[in-house]
Image 1: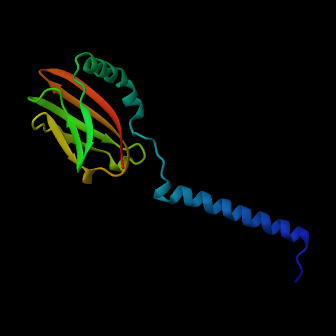
Image 2: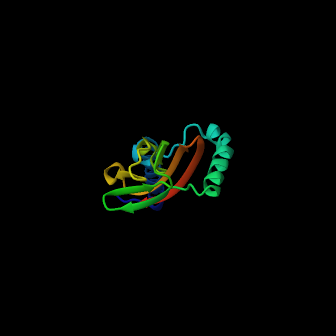
Image 3: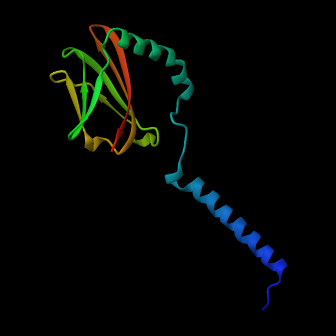
Length: 146
């Protein structure tokens, strides 16, 4: 059977359309390519943004910023004060919200240790909200785990 140029063009279009349909179906059904909103309550978080800015400015003004060191076996959060600190550390993964988690602050000798087993490789946004002597503070950091 001999294929003329008209049949060749039609077959090329059919294969191209089949490829595009396969690609669209694959991208919409495969969880690997799931790119939902970064946060579910985007607008509610946007309204609380000004409060967050005020907390961060107060933290810097009072020299209460928490420092993060990536050490052997995990992360070390170094708090400026060693006693009576209460709050939470939020780990936010921009690429996969299913890996987000929150830990209560537990300070020993001015440090909190988070083992590397809890953190997947890649970029993390760390938000530390804590209260010391009735004052609220917040530190945010972007870290990259290798």
